[in-house]
Image 1 (cartoon, helix red, strand yellow):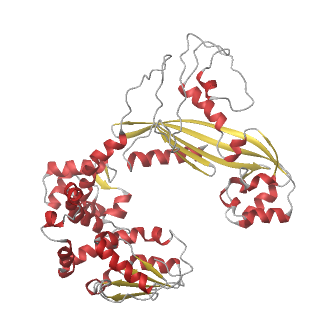
Image 2 (image 1 turned 90 degrees about the vertical axis):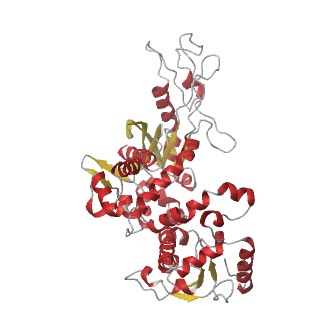
Image 3 (image 1 turned 135 degrees about the vertical axis):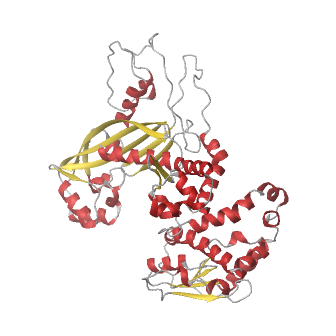
Length: 506
């Protein structure tokens, strides 16, 4: 049950800190299998799966699922939780399993993410001789016990003694609404209707979000509105949290942008904790304005505020300092100086169907790109921005598809090669060419990884609108197309199409 509780608490804390939302309820579950007083969790490899399944062959074993229901609230911006735990046990017996059947099942891959090395709801069902108890508990979540526990928590019976009816299977929702002595309604008991219903999209009408994975389950959502005996809702309109979050989201973004622009996280990295007055003196700002900005960053989970002052969170040290391991500082400054001004003219862009660079910066988009590359300071800042976001997202991009079939790739507009270096690390047989403007290629040395073999990555300078692009099996356009007009995009894609042979991929 402790693992289930920690899972749920992690989700609750993440939502409270990262998403600035306090869930009403978070539910976590964790399943284990026991046989001969030994706990079997998830196998680490096929041999471990074979060891587990061999122990279960011909034997009865127990499947335990611990469930934690975390009730959450927020007071003075601090998360408060109340935990309710329970567990369910189900007896399962395996047939005598042949070596052939064991390995056939193991090679299917199914055992690798299942407690005890099998999934009864799928191919693993063919191994089972009988089940005594809740079948869904073996699947990974004891729904029957869970529903009864919810009834105890949310719809407690009157204080006078009640004789409960016993059911052999999962009862209907009405069973939990009407906990009277018999089948007839009690005049002293108010019925509460169904907790939530699924709409056509599979989402709960009450706003509940479900996340179910293998043998564990996590659920977050809002309290269900009660109804009186006449069917009239007794609850007020739900708080539109998502809409309110969108309304105020720009404030949080700007607070982050300004804190990075003033390098507050850099100052706190080596010297924290510091008082607001000390930080203000270092960065040359007003004390009252600095303190308000620091408090905003603390509320957003970017800083920690103590009696000694303010200090960085681990996330701030990693992502928000200019020299962090996965620093986003450059991209944040780019967002503040370039993207933010453009989005302030979004209304005009929608009305006119045109770019707003002339309104935001007094220049056309093409002229703005020329400025990037003709000013060394602006160029380095722009390249740092592109490198920071590419470096952070490179692994996710590189693993989104299986690229092991390709021998060569060309990253068009690949800038510093952050994605290219990740690709050759993941696919040792792949050689990547980064193709970008001469002004970019001439300044890549600062961004190259140290201590790694960079031979599979080569840099070629050129203009992909004017010059021939290198031949490759795979062409990559990452964070490139959105910068250009439809006409320019058509030119670029046509050039790639012209050099692509059968079997090549974009």
